[in-house]
Length: 303
Image (cartoon, rainbow, N blue to C red; front, top):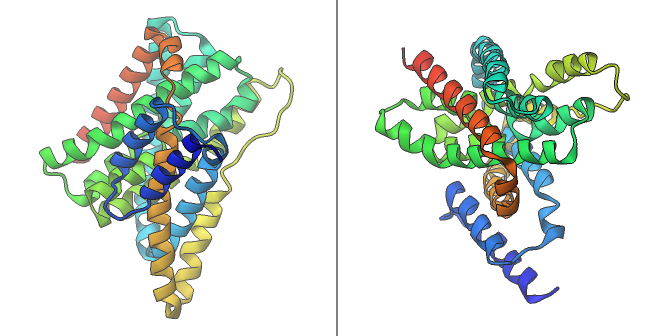
């Protein structure tokens, strides 16, 4: 292992320390990467760390609250989906963005960022630059949401519950939703994570619809986020075996810190070159789409 990889690994380990916040980890990853410190092998485990952390955090959640939040959030997640896809269709025509690029950006904004884009890609069949544009734009806005949402939430004196719902509806990726929730408070974290995973379940029907729309193309496999099922199983298992609560607290803590590590690795994947290539029209579309759902959901929740 060369010196650069060692330094990168040390920074990654530091992100596990309790004093490192999600936002700090994300920023540190971007800075370390910009300085030329990188470990491609370690970064390749980003998705695994993210999914495993979410599953582990399930052990620290209340089944009763999860059921309550899920039943309440089904309608609002469905409405947000319809709103984002409608706005996406309008903005695609206003900015004249490539259809597949625009569709991927819309999927990422409506459901769960990079995971939704990855799920849609096999059935949409985008070109490499279209996929790269969409991922880059969604990632930048997702990182901004992680940092800005807690600030706005405190400024508007949002309750933990309202902020949890808002973050889950308006921030792209699960990692940043969890990071923003954790920065705001324990209740906000639990609500945000649960609502976000309910929102993420929409990957399945949306991807199936896209598969039908693009049925004339070559058939491909559909990526389904099975880690959501493991997350639910962890909550159920913890509920029916309460005597092991002391173990579950440790697992939940490991999940929380693992999420911060995943954010560090995500930050390290920022590419200035890709940002420049994405183009202002695609970025403007993604930005307006994100601002629209952020404002609409905020008005709805604060009403």
